[in-house]
Amino acid sequence: MINSGLFASDLTVSRAEQTLIEGAELHLAPSSITYLYGENGAGKTSLMRCLCGLLPADQGSIRWNGKPISSSDSNYFNDLLFLAHALSMKAELSIMENLHFYAKLRGVNNANGLIQQAAQQLGIDHLLARRFAELSAGQQHKVALCRLVVEPAKIWILDEPFVNLDHQTRDWLANTMMEFAKQGGVVLFTSHHEIEQLTIDQRLSLEH
Amino acid sequence: MLLTLLKRELMIARRNWIGLAIPVFFFVMVVSLFPFAVSPDAPVLQKIAPGIIWVAALLATLLSLEQFYRTDYQDGSLEQLVIMSSPTLVASAKIIAHWILTGLPLVLISPLLGVLMQLNYGVGYDSVAEDHTVVLMLSLLLGTPTLCLIGAVGMSLTLAANRNGMLVSVLILPLYVPILIFGASTVTASLENFGYNGQLAILGALLLLAMVFAPFAAGRALKISVS
Image (cartoon, rainbow over all chains, first blue to last red; front, top):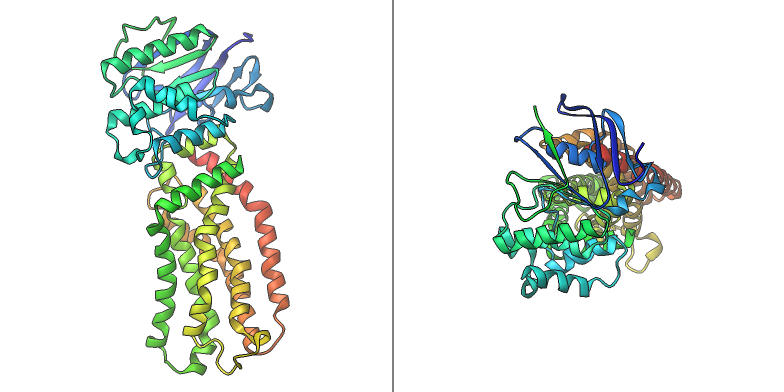
């Protein structure tokens, strides 16, 4: 039994009555970046959703720092930041309001400064008052990435975070991920391309 | 946490008020068809008014349920909310917001429909005690939250299904029947100068019962639906 980081053992995940992962063991250690790859439909997103507690596993246990993720003393869901394919932002609200809401849910009360800072790093600080629906796809993606800076977390699970990004933002994201890992964070991400800027500690491949 | 969620719902609704106004318009329109279709005679209208207004309120609630979770489910924020707070809390915030935005307007606009349907025919202008529209409002005030609570369970269950609006209507309409019976009979009793406290008490009891169980059931169903 491994008592630090996220540890899944004997994990079986299925989706739409098709078994995607069977009896897998997986350990995401603190201060590490894990790259999950595989073909389309291999089950990357399902595995991530399972690790986020959204998709119940058919079998097996997932533990965060030695405690089952569903138990409240593991504090897993407070430590987890999951960026899914869908950006999870409301079109009707401004960027500021969107990010502010998520920060508030995490218990960050004075998030304005942090949001400013994150938006500045990503070059969208002049758009903060605009509605989310008015932005371009790339800009919308950047808004979702701002959450990485604004919300305190100990584990990031990122589904295709490098999609739709320009070079500058790719660099920024790679650096932010490495910085986070250096401070003891756990990162799991998927991508269809190698990210050369990133130092990857562990590679996981999913096959049909 | 609940307040944060609630504030967000209200903020989004303020920017998106057209969608919320439609069920209220629907409510008014459906009821106003009856004087044309049945008879403009005051005694006739007065007699059928409780049933008509209550059925229209029920259908308006059903219509508004369509937008209960839809955008949140589509843009992925429902998943985030379920991860970051608890499904029961998310469902509770949705139910409260939904009632404030769609149930309460029905209650507030019902006196207008009372006038339209000649609910106070034969009642003196100065007798507030005999005002039947007050009874109508009271019955709707106690009934519509129950409709929202039951609707929330139905919506949570059918979230992932296609055409869930249709499915949810078929699923929950039978569950709405007791509320319809006691809601309409409250007003009818008042029209016939009988006591209506008993009916109101039953509506209140149904509301309390739904308040205890529905948020948990909706939360549980929500958790299953997002997986």
